Length: 95
Image (cartoon, rainbow, N blue to C red; front, top):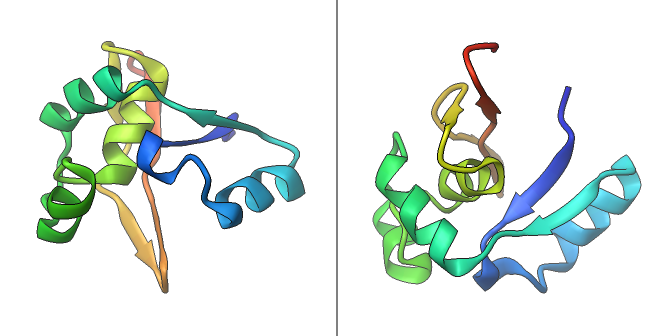
């Protein structure tokens, strides 16, 4: 089950993300910059574009990890579907 949509401060005003959260009936979470930067050290994938524009090797992975805190982990590497990049994170050992 997906509980919310999270993103980095750089994407806080992204209309598409807010619209998706609204349509899906989910909360839209913008993580704190410091948490986003810390989580960037734990990403699986490395995107030069993300690093250049967002300061993280993977914006989606870092946002997912940051939203759940320091004990979170990625379920899998980020997925790119057309123009959309998503990452799923969880707490604990459950997948």
